[in-house]
Image: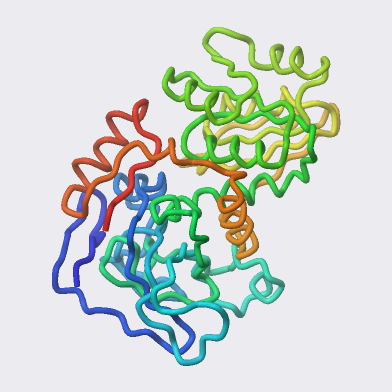
Length: 354
């Protein structure tokens, strides 16, 4: 079968003779329909530290480079394992949760698979990936799509689940207020999830003109350009002089995390969603005064996937405009990675049509 394989930074190879995976008793075999290119994929394409298993096997999959790419994907079920119980049938369209976990460590046993001591992802650290003709996954991580949710939108469930999980950390209630630092794909997904939770004030900080427009279309009530306005002062002005209740850092820059800490109100919460490539200075006094809090959010749970699929089916989430390009497997580098590197003000989510 075909598979796009990662051999290291700047070395992706479309191979045509990769063995087709077997469907184990607890699995379903999926024929991918659409697969998104994630920021993690781009980081891996550029840097050797994102998928660091060149010589040392991943502790769960046992795999080293090369690995098949693609962890944001939807597809059609073509085979169901003998031990699978539930509603999944051959022909069902599904969104796949690409979680790889050991199921043995304390976080896994307590249900926090996103905190597994050996966390990995299908399409990054082994067990195949969405940029292939077939992939077999644990049936509990395959979620049937409603009839009114097309397969291209199904490939958006994974990044939406990242955002849904982050918003869940805050316990935000209808009428609440939030600040989103950065309007890239994850930031836009968080705006959508906040809107679905009926947040009243959704303030977005962004400098790229096209992303400002996206933020407004997706539900931002105010957009601040930090090059033109004082972020902290404007946030307090918009939120009764106190600032928003919570903030999400999706930018991964020292200046953005500082602004988020200073902008939220007393006893407010900053949620870090960004992936940081290097250490940055952090002043804890920006949190201490006002007893503000800081937490992180990584990945998602099966509940997040179910909630996103349900919200898409109910029309609470609508992310079609986030898909700015579709391309094919043989054009992933040219139409995908290069576009995200050199035209990032133009593209949000690029899908591979399998």
